[in-house]
Length: 191
Image 1 (cartoon, rainbow, N blue to C red):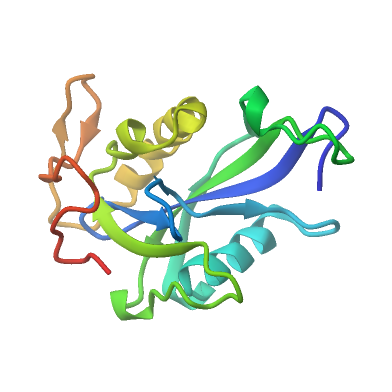
Image 2 (cartoon, helix red, strand yellow):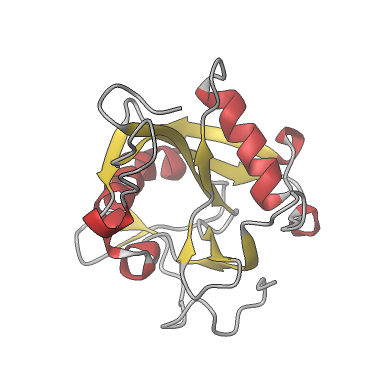
């Protein structure tokens, strides 16, 4: 679904574990990594789209996650000129997204990347909350920063007892968990 301004309506999903780390996935057959995301269908509300995309891309059903929060409004990014398909109608110039932050309440074993005919991802790992900003494709970086910044407080408010927060360089409370310089590096949760 593309709005009158040319933005495709979409949901973005930040899935966290009990340590405050987030699910980071590699696009199938590519070297790029991102959060799960996907389009909203005609007559589909954002919550329904989020649960559908979560299952299609990550294999998780709603009983395995808890919604912590979602962005108050739409966050937008524009596609670089070379990615705009000028011959398609309606013309899509970018994405307009509602972002969700979820907590995994089920077992990691419930995560499956093969629940759709054409899987979106072929590998995943848990990374530090802010790591995606340094690893996502450049034209999505600002929308990721906006989503992570807006949803961080809700994640911290819902943090399980016994976890600790400390300040990062920006003075924002965040879990300090070592992360390799590349998400494809060793991780106990990597699949």
